[in-house]
Image 1: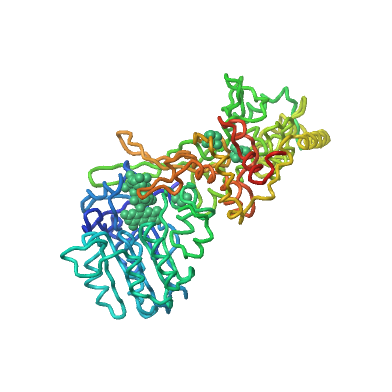
Image 2: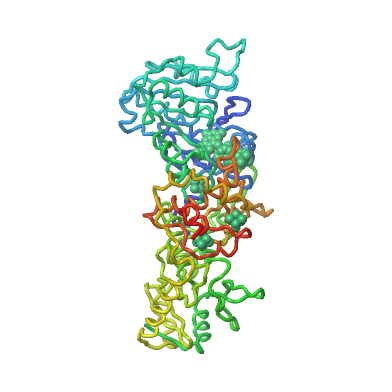
Length: 278
Length: 342
Ligand SMILES: Cc1cc2nc3c(=O)[nH]c(=O)nc-3n(C[C@H](O)[C@H](O)[C@H](O)COP(=O)(O)OP(=O)(O)OC[C@H]3O[C@@H](n4cnc5c(N)ncnc54)[C@H](O)[C@@H]3O)c2cc1C
Ligand code: SF4
Ligand code: SF4
Ligand code: FES
């Protein structure tokens, strides 16, 4: 029956690079055994990675679709699959299937021609990195890009080198980093992301894209609303437990929406229509 | 329409079983009916319905999906899927027939689930009209007519005869196979039976169950209803209601190491279980109340919202008769709809 497609049957992927980001986050580069990208995707979409015998888990594709050579995943160690991956070496084969879910509306008027404000907390930078690099690639399609990114400590910032050496040096891209606690080696801002967003006094003439732990999203959205942002100007991604990735195993719904299929990207007004169960 | 004398029915089963696997409800040692593979000596049960629903034939309780070979750092994915053989499921009630439609709208929409699809393509369903619907039945509340069950072949059983009508190409094929045993018939007795059934249906205690308050777009009406507390208070979270339900479709995917290789399989799961949605940073349905609410909101609001208003319940009554604490969708609907005391 090999002629009929089955999304649940994965392809083999090879880990070709492992970058240590923080004590519990590593970024993995994955290609097929013949050195290609496993599939194409749009920023915000996810993939199911698995280690046969260990399990399968969903991850945001953190590389941009404009990267034609490989896909990347920033993965936080927190359970069976992720712990196993953290021990994997270059050359290790895993499995990969996808892409799953919707994407940020990068090619529509919702983003195009707009000022973009990215706000990330911790591992929440993973899905945003894909969008940011996509927008940097098609730079003329968008106006200014701002990034407010925070984590517990300076050692917990993911992707630090790329942010400092590439993004922060871009024309019309402004990067604001913050950490939760004072540190003698840290000369930049100290404090939580939502407060920093308020301090930066962003005017609501832009689109905000917020990603991070649920509690951070909640307070950041509240801060944005104080600044005058409307629900229709705020985008976020949701993370619920997933198994199938295609709206069939019944696991990831919020009301009538399946996060794996109708999400993970939601505009805040869409989310507001759903029951408060996330 | 064709008919066969009930005295010849085992000949008919034998003829079908000669050509393909035939499954039908057979009384078990505990007196309850279960779908069983027909062989000489097995008798078609008189029970109104089986404890477990026939969804098993298309969406098995556990099902191997693929295998992996792991050697050193290398992984090989082995597609072990097979095209299903033709088979017949005989004696399916109208509610359970409708349940296949409900599952189709999950498994056959893009991206099509090929495991389910191949069994649906090759399974021939023979439905039978219910002459003795019970007090736990409320299929009619969901617009299902137990006198006119529309599967590949519909059959009506009278005192001494079985009347059959094919509705699809697959059904036609099946009737051709047994043509030598059956004879042409007029539908007089079937009409009579349908009238009889419709009279009984009107007298059933749950006949007037009101579904009009539910449906797509009604999340706000019910999600925060205070009634959920009381309704879910004694729920054990045992999952029985989801396992016996012909429309419940939640599943889990797991790996099993056989020592020689790894099998990835899926198995039924239940939204009633606390593990179902647990994540590293918490659980979005922490209490049994939230899980209980999910099951019934899904059937009565979320599913219809995504499926042209069709409810995710067929009124088979299995959860009514099987729940250890006697909670069920009927009580939920009455309470939420404000009719508990009627
Ligand atoms: C759409 C989406 C995108 C994601 N993107 C990323 C990403 O880019 N990087 C990243 O590191 N993680 C991401 N996650 C989270 C990641 O899927 C989970 O951390 C992962 O499933 C844990 O797998 P495990 O086998 O290591 O943990 P397990 O051994 O399965 O479980 C460890 C703990 O994590 C819980 N868990 C299981 N599934 C999830 C889940 N989906 N989310 C949170 N906790 C879970 C378990 O219940 C348990 O408490 C994403 C999740 C989703 C749904
Ligand atoms: S919810 Fe209960 S009555 Fe409805 S289809 Fe499922 S088991 Fe049958
Ligand atoms: S409603 Fe009844 S059958 Fe369903 S999980 Fe609760 S106790 Fe079990
Ligand atoms: S992960 Fe299966 S329904 Fe979303």
